[in-house]
Length: 50
Image (tube, rainbow, N blue to C red; front, side, top):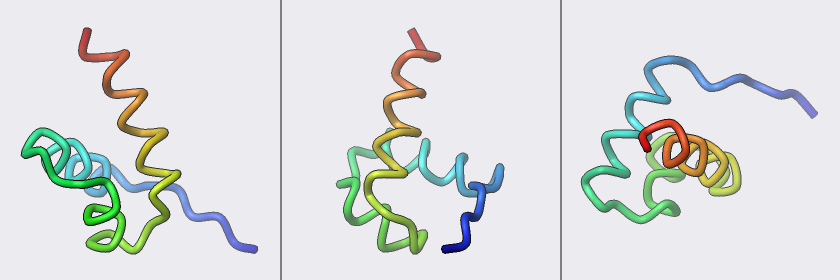
């Protein structure tokens, strides 16, 4: 199984979609990533933004 890191561009997209109150499953489909990966990034963003 190949593992691809998220790019800076993808991280920016995740943050913008999340701030626009988009569902995680929808964001995952847009970026062709798993929702679990996005939940990890979003939880990290919640910690860092505080």
